[in-house]
Amino acid sequence: MTLLHLVLGDQLSHSISALRDAQPQEDVVLMAEVMAEATYVGHHQKKIAFLFSAMRHFAEELRGRGFAVRYVTLDAPGNSQSLRGEVERALAETGATGVVVTEAGEYRLLEEMRGWQAHLGVPVEIRDDDRFLITRAGFDRWADRRRELRMEYFYRDMRRHFGVLMRGADPEGGQWNFDKENRKPPLKGMAGPRRLSWRHDAITSEVLELVEARFSHHVGKLRPFHFAVNAEQAEAEFEQFVTEILPSFGDYQDAMVAGEPYLFHSMIAAYLNAGLLLPIDVIRRAERAYHDGAAPLNAVEGFIRQILGWREYVRGIYWRFMPDYAGRNALEAHRPLPALYWGGETKMRCLASAVQDTLEHAYSHHIQRLMVTGNFALLAGLSVDEVCEWYLAVYADAYEWVELPNTLGMALYADGGLMASKPYAASGKYIDRMSNFCGGCTYSVKDSTGENACPFNSLYWRFIAVNREKFRGNHRMANIVAGWLRMDEMKKQAILARAEDCLERLDAGTL
Image (cartoon, rainbow, N blue to C red; front, side):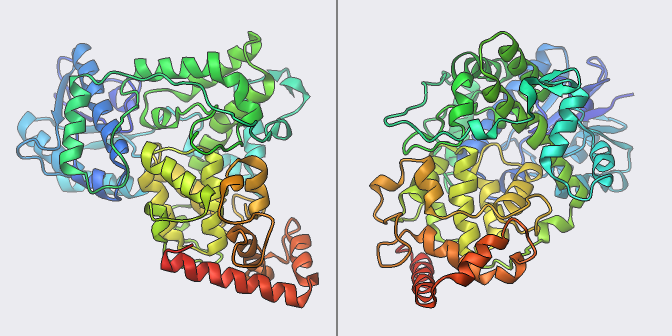
């Protein structure tokens, strides 16, 4: 009896549950490039090229292991351009009597999969994605015991459960996180180390030509193309991070430098989220670096927290609260996304730099995402739906399960505090402290009023003023609201006037 084992483009792990009991001599592995998945948002050209190339390389690895692989390229004759259509076509042409697939990582596709059995008329087994370290049911059991679903407490429980950076019942170093040590501003002239680069083999070259031909209208620059496209290359990049870069990651993980999109960050999120690296392997390798004396505790703990804590936590939040979560808009933010997010001109150096990095590399590190593009969207009241779609489209590591909670919950506070105990709102002072952006900017970060005042400053106070009633009951916001209310009336009016001027310029594309 032949079974069809479907492997999705973000499931490129040989240990994936869909392949667990696949029989090389009997079964067929299906992989397909389809327009429905490549275009449900306007994905960055580099993201599409990375996934198509990685998929094709993974298919070759499966063939090398003896599997019969049915790989459907985007331009293959008869391609239905949908996953269900390709499953249906493969069933008809192979005679397979059932389908095995690992659950999709996005709600929309998993819901579609749940209807396949009735449509296709054969058994469709949807298996858990056991590459994650806690199941969806396990997260729900943790959440059911909590009044507030704060990542910090989830992270501590995960550390205890997996015995990561622990000394018996206590955390290594006597504290659970070292955030206070991980907020150093950049040094003058700071630059990140040179990263590994890869020659384009025939597969990658063919994919790049395909993307140029079919997706040149999509956002971003395709070349130069720098991504690893198989597990061996991804592991080499991670090893370089651990041995050469991780020691500096902790101190400067929040730092931002114009023209330096990577600094000391690992850049492995795209590889983890596509399956080329496995989270438990990455965590244990970083932990070993600490125990071997190769990296300090603040760096290793900060890195591990992003994976063992944050990555697992946001996935749990996503599945626990979808589909309603996607429609939340607690602060009623509806202003259309301005052109500057797509590369339009702006005199704001921080935004221009973050957006340029994003469009060139399909990447910017988490502080740029949260405290520059995200913070500005929060303060300006940009449309939650449009901002979330932008984040999903422009980053190579973005899938809805990870993007939506990070954007809607953390950056935009649109879930009303489900994830964050306060909005991640900040004036230009934060950006000035943690970057070199402000020194070369048209606007003055020291001013809140006047034609040359930093837009972040007036928009910050406008944000507080507009939402003050919503924040009165938040103990972390009460003093800020009180500060606004105590402010001199003429000063408040000048700040609000500058904020409105900034918003008008934003809409006109002249900010």
